[in-house]
Image (cartoon, rainbow, N blue to C red; front, side):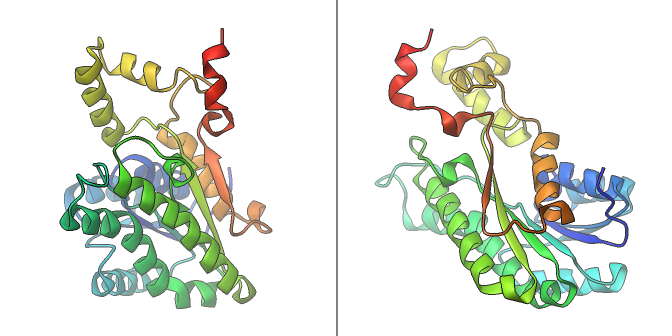
Length: 263
């Protein structure tokens, strides 16, 4: 296990799923965690047993982020790692997506990362820290009827590369993790919708269906994605910046037009 002794991670969307798993692993390695999200209760439930700091706020709002950073400095001395994990849905096709839905998809998925990176960058430069952005398999490929989500996850890859390009000489690395299906509360909701759409037996059958053509044949756990996040944040990845790491069970290796030939 990597030692995070003396290090501080600022994790958005840290109250559930991948964010909570990253927080638990970082704290287990001796680091301190600062969790930011819109709902106080789940943040506090994760932070309390870890001895972490929970700050309710909007990661897309610069004033809220500056307030959270000030609290992190006071409680922990500063921030070494930003995990830009906050995100949300962007459901609907082009013609189904009105201006409000588009703006919400932008704010939840892209603005949260952009604003946090911008506001924390002076801190990360001073401490020679780094950023890990949570994009998605949808940052490289398009699923059906999720134009807002797909577009913003693609944009996160571009944001990662641009900021890595601009701040590498100032000692800051920036990388992205792109998970496929991950067992989280949000994914469970999507699986339940698939159960109802396809008349499946249960959520397990839905997960089996969506990973049927994935080489590893299963979804990831939140801890498996957290492993990838913390590798990129660690000194073991000291020469890695501006890259995207696929954590998708091999889904992105599959040539879709040949699926029909599989036994």
